[in-house]
Image 1 (cartoon, helix red, strand yellow):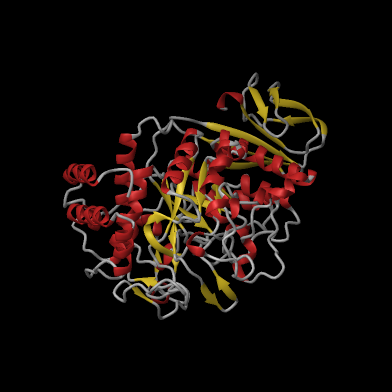
Image 2: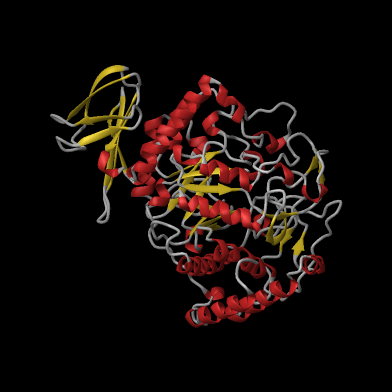
Length: 566
């Protein structure tokens, strides 16, 4: 893998091995996370399907002779890394307040198709890996990925890689099967207990990596032949030798993949991992991945000390959790453990800083105050104190998104962007992208191409501005996602958030369903008299006088925070 030569990498690994001794090597690591950096509970994370977001280079639209003969929305459509970079440069993400990008996996996918019950499918989504060491040419090149990450960093945006250890891509019309000591294809998961979630294939199209095995396996012949044709076989083998010599890990499938995944961090400065299908893998492996990724990230930072304007640890978030609140019985109330039925696992104890809160799309049906107060209590005094959650209203594979008809897009934005915890914008949320595409089956309906064409409509432009105001407010004020919530008035709805820390404190005041035009709003002593505040919704400056502010805007929403915090 680029950009290091084998010789240089081996020298670096020898030096690191002196620091990474046998008493703390990856296999026996007992990574215990400190309290989460509050940045990650206030982050605005933009998640996009790479192939569906923006087509920056039409010349790579049909790599490997992939055709357009798949079922509806199951072909490659042309989105790529260049398209993402162009949107970073255009300031699209900055205007939304986005400070973290997450895109579907960029690694090389199976080259062919899989005929599923509902029709032919190609791996446009990125979750059918074939070669963990190379970028799929339908998405772009390693050089283009490096440019994208460097550009994001230059704009103050961090990048999460979507990573997979649980499974490979399927055997297709042109792709051979992985060796039997690498994978299993049965039984198919039944979900009702630990074994039937972990020691199984999540679908007939997804061969399960033998992550339960510590037995030594050889590299698949197809992979060696591929690397030979690409002129990098000797380099890849030398790097693997150096990795296994340093870590003393057995050459089992999961450890090969950990080496390949963490190389992307070491070589390109990826800031964190979003771990796919994490609950379908033995939890111990995530400690190893976190330890190796952290080591790689620190190495990259030492070589790129001016790339980022602040210093943060490597971040890892897992696709696992249904937050158990208000009677929703997924993760048991009062705990942060995932419940398999016969076994409960606290994934935060295995290297994860944060987990994806799959329950939010259901919880968003609650009244705003109920939602906000419960989440604030969970994150500040409850089971989730000192750890992170990521909320979303729509995802790429959740069959029950919030407001899938897009009937209340302005209200949806308020609930997501003002909720305690980090906020995930799924591409097109901010433009009310259609989630009900006629003729699609299953998750394809959530995966249409980005609806840029709708920006010609006034209502879409107004919705985007609404998301931009909320995102900018959150981006500038840590207390929105990481602070303690307090309601001050029921109708109109007024609340404050307060974050107190030695290094930095922050507080905000929010009003919703206020009168348009002239309005006088109590500050509830959240700010001292004479403080200059900004209303992020109207972009207006006001000064606190007699514990009140006066505004004359055409909006019923007020988002107040100190100007000095911008």
